[in-house]
Length: 414
Ligand code: SF4
Image (cartoon, rainbow, N blue to C red):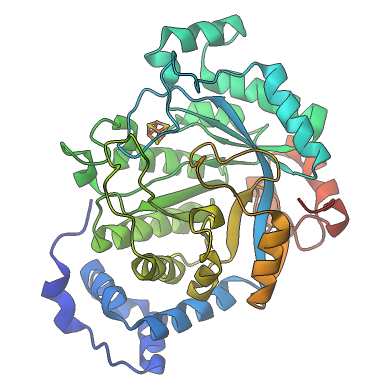
């Protein structure tokens, strides 16, 4: 699945001295790249100033009002953090005896959602490890005691309660779900989350990041992304940059995501996430991507992903995240005024006040969005196709004519 060859082999195809207009022309005529390798080499070698100019222009074409940068005001419901897989960079996964192991009761989850409602949140992000009940008897007992056979059944039930009792809109990230499991969530979740991470099969090899994570087999993840498309279920995906993949493999991943979206139109957002090594993991001493390399990856994402939002999490680049606006991003993702980022607990989110000021200082306007992107709300045809009728009554009171959260729903800043 990954690209073959190396960048040196194709560097002769790329004239790094292109004037900006020539570069723009090359991108406007997408067929001018004979193959993925040529495109990767071009993006790798293009001088940064021209690349950022191109990707900023691409954002203007993507966004009808390119001044607006969005975020989703959320609470993070860490439902169960046991996981059958073991990715080499992960500290989210816990063992049942760890002090940080979590198996929430529905009452605890609802209390978090209710606190979010009071803080003006609109998203209930429900996160779990990958199929924990398949290897941990404790997880199976937890589910059975709650009267459920599997995790998607519990999430469906919990999502319905969150909707009815708090009005927050559920968005679930529970790993590689089957098509029927996703279908089970369609009437209670406005969208799903599933990181592709990378299309590189190489990362499954011994010593690589996904050696012990069969759910991260690219074909498995792609199957879930395609199943969501067949269900007209909006979904967020993303790449984790710096876990051993090559630049060519990043470009390959972006092209694959774009191709799936061209067929189904359901991929609302791609998260470009920079890897940060975590103490105590097998990748503790691996390097993070450098700022300029990651900036190049983000700009490349904006250029390849034609109709998909591009997001960079601000908490993973605390002092420099504003610079990613220069690469054409249009979203900061979910930001919580209440709950930590349980996947990166060492990286607190900026306050929403700070995020607003930082965005404004670069000349943009921060607006809250739902965990469902505006295009699925303002276009009647897309709404009919992608929004389950049972969710419309919860969504409509929250949004304005642009499909963004009504300003009067935004409470005091946190
Ligand atoms: S990254 Fe996700 S799939 Fe991998 S070990 Fe952590 S929780 Fe499990």
